[in-house]
Amino acid sequence: MTDETPAPADTHVLTETNTAEAAAALPAPPYIQRWRSFLEEAGALARHADPLVASGRLARINGLVMEAAGLKLPLGCTCKVFPVAGPPVEAEVVGFQGEKLFLMPSDDLFGLSPGARVERLMATVAPPRVGQKTVRGRRSADRAKQAPVGISLLGRVLDGVGRPLDGKEPLRPEAQRSLQSRPYNPMTRAPIDKALDVGVRAINGMLTVGRGQRMGLFAGSGVGKSMLLGMMARYTTAEIIIVGLIGERGREVKEFIDQILGEEGLRRAIVVAAPADTGPLMRLQGAAYATTLAEYFRDQGKDVLLIMDSLTRYAMAQREIALSVGEPPATRGYPPSVFARLPQLVERAGNGPVGGGSITAFYTVLAEGDDQQDPVADAARAILDGHIVLSRSLGDAGHYPAIDIEQSISRAMVNLVTPEHLNVIRRFKSLFSRYQRARDLLAVGAYTPGSDQVLDEAVRRYPEMERYLQQNFDVSAGLEESVRDLSGLFSAAQQAE
Image 1 (cartoon, rainbow, N blue to C red):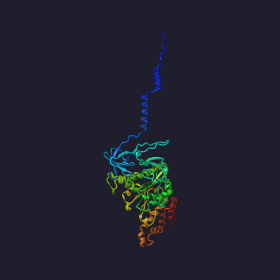
Image 2: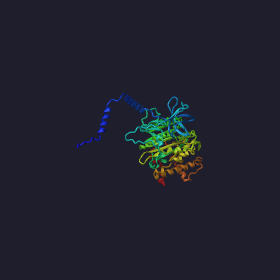
Image 3: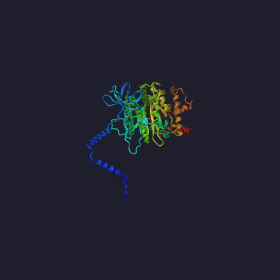
Image 4: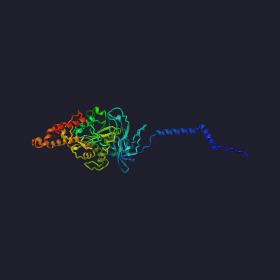
């Protein structure tokens, strides 16, 4: 019987492999080479081709609002409207009705024609870096308009979307951030327990402001609020200063930078300017951009001073947009959306987590005709952590800064000062108010000295108290110095008691 050795099981596989290798070694037919070359060129063109972009058409322009058809985009999305000639006009979706979108432009509408092409403007995403945390745009706020941020922007003057206005070198930002940030968890915020030196004696001593506090500066026009803001920007101990000039006159922008803020203040500041001649959308974006810059530096652990002039112009810009899209007015011509947008902007300021940075914000509120019951002023007073009222009568009398101590308050001051300092403030306000109520009697000589001991002390100390509240623009008063001078006003009286 003959032993037959079985053939290996993989002999057939090896034979097929050798055959395939031999076939691959042979030159391909010419038509195969032509197809390979064609497919490689087509793939290269596809990699460099622009993606398919959905577009619509401009159907109508009614005042400031544009109506577009053929697109389905969410609220807050940014679009480009292409004119017949010239650069495209940026616009934002502010409403819709049926199949029509309501767009609010941020630039001029000159050159647009019926049927102009409307495309969505995609946000530019910076390429990821090694060691950098990448946050995907899962929420609508992450997909809103992006603007440049970074330490390299210090000393620059920008518009509401981050374009330079100072004519200097191009920007080299460290990152891009959305103008609409996510809501901050109130349970993770650090408490307001550290005072911030703003360099103004009346505020440091009588209305002590804490790091992360949000204050309102209520005043009419021409009372000296710009000078007071400039003093705080120049003399504060905050590391970074963000100034938002929203809806003000164009002339005031350069004057504030050159004469009030100065070169020293600008060196550690970023100025965002959206003057009154810009559209309402640009004014809204300017306020959001200034807040975005402050949030960026707060996340870096910096103490930021945010100055916004003014919150009233921000509310007026929102009123223009809301009325244009058909929202009915409610209170003195202001639609309800105005009072919904105010806390959304203000709540973005404040402290970060414990041990992190802070945003101390001052918002100016224009009281029309010095009316403190204006709807915007009344709403701002309710959502802020205190208010400083500037008096026109004090300004007319040459009393600067024209701070009305009786009507001003800092709600966080109780947690920032010592009990002794708080007692001195109460005594100061009591004597100052007592003198103001008896001013008319003193002016006509109807008061007899000795009939009221409190009023006698108020009359005797009023010149010193008034001198304490006044301060020249070119003079800085530190926090410790302000508290020491305030205590010195009543040290002799306390020893006598």
